[in-house]
Length: 112
Image: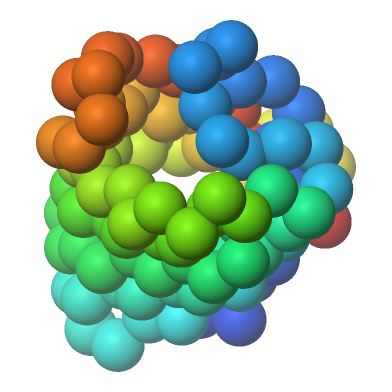
């Protein structure tokens, strides 16, 4: 089982409708099958996610964030891990806003 505790990730690609940018840093914590994360960037003042992780390392989560316009944005996401040849984790995300335009997107994060 993949354990996310104290791992740090940053995006390497994301859909155009995302607020996440290449300067976003994600700090993961995990207790048993519960995952939480805090993140921020130039475009996101504060963001958090909360989810559960299954035996394959797949995270099912919800997230909320406040952007630089002062808007509270919310969404849901499924993150599927890939262990890279260097032993670090790449996360493939499929997400949807539950606020705003309700659009969907994808992102890829890599452990730094």
